[in-house]
Image 1: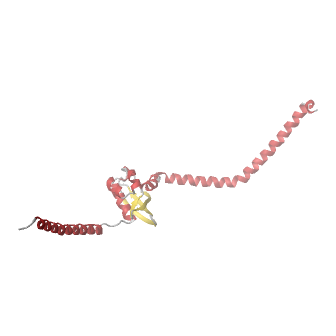
Image 2: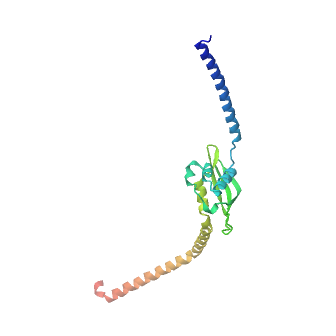
Image 3: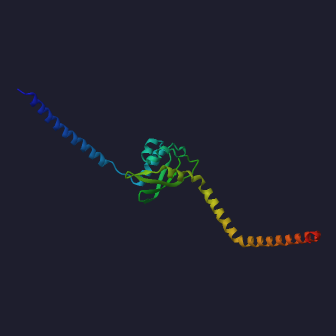
Length: 198
């Protein structure tokens, strides 16, 4: 007849044997899953992020942005359904920039958006720094205007530098004339009031 002690011993051995096999199974599954998970390059992270944005899948897009900038991810109507191309990739330590071109779906706008997507390495994974990328993205319509204003400013500065000797001569001449006129005015006052002189 089995005693209570023998029964507990059999139960414990059975539990220990199955627990080890369960743990082995779990670790094997985790090992297989971790082997399937690949780390994206900056280009792949950029492409995946912008495709999710073009599809309006904000939750997926947020997975590819830095934690600090996820709250900035909002729907961008002007890129819905757009296609994407990437170009030059510059990696500098934990920072990267990927030249990005977005071609809007609407053929009427016919305006390519060309800018740099900025990425940071966060926990050894490349993530889009959406704040810096958004800064690059938002100034696009004004880029030509800013460049034109900068060019105009450069021309004005150059012309002013060329004209500086002329301005200096004019000021000097004006100053000399003013001093002469003040002297003449003083002499006239002295002539009209000779009593005050004595």
